[in-house]
Structure formats: C-alpha cells, structure tokens
Image (cartoon, rainbow, N blue to C red; front, side, top):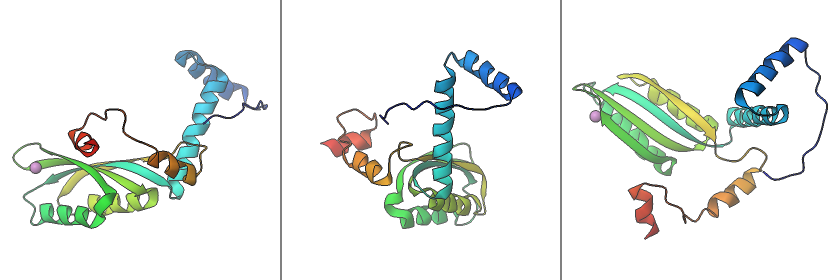
Length: 166
Ligand code: NI
C-alpha cells in the first residue's frame, strides 16, 4: 500500500505505553512502525471475520481405519472443486494420516468447511489458519486485479506450478 503518511495524536495510559515501548525496543522499530503493524494485523483480522477473500491451510490428523472416512474426505474435497488449491498427505504411522489442505475462498465459508471436516468422525486433531487474500488497505476489486496480474515470472518452487507455465 503506497499512500501519504498522516500524523495523529494518540492518548494512552502510561502503564500501557511502557509495555508498548518495551516491545518497540525489543523489536528495534519505532512507535509508528509497531503501531502500523498492529493496525494492519487488526484490519486483516476484522476482514477475515466478516467474510473476505482468503486462503487457508487446514490440517487434519485422522485414523484411516475408520469406516469410509478416507472416501468421505476425498468426496468432500471433490465437491469443493477449485476451492482446494493443493493437498499434502503424510502417512504418520500404521493408523494415522496427516493431511494439509490449502483452500481459497471466502473466509467465512472456509471456516464452515473446516468446522465440518474437523467434526467428521475419525478426525482426531486439526485446525485451520486463515489469512486474508488481499493487502490491508486495498479494495476487493484491487485485490482481484492484482491476482490476475500475477504472471508467474518467479519460481514458486513447486512442480505443479512449473508445469502450468510450459
Ligand atoms: Ni495416509
């Protein structure tokens, strides 16, 4: 985001400011820099909560012996179609599988998908990490434009993407 910096005054309790300044010192940044980082993080959090374009990694650990679980998980992913960007599957031991599913879509829908998969019988652990699929400050339209302009002149380091470039 490139725009002009605006100065404004902030009132804060002395004790809170002391905590803030300790973090400023530990990180070797300025008050302004830290405050900007905090605001950006909060803007992203607020957007994700409301239903914004997002990407997510969903991690599932499950027992593949549970009847029809593997089929159920596969079927569910097929139904999501293009929403599933990539998956990683690791056979942890004789019983347990770890699957990481990278999803793209609206943050509230991704959350719903995750809740459903995590609640499936046989899934023992897991969680989802959702991040906004746009820069804080840019509009949804700008984010879409930026995505379309992404021409892959850099190496993503995955054979799948490299194949697409040919
Ligand atoms: Ni497995």
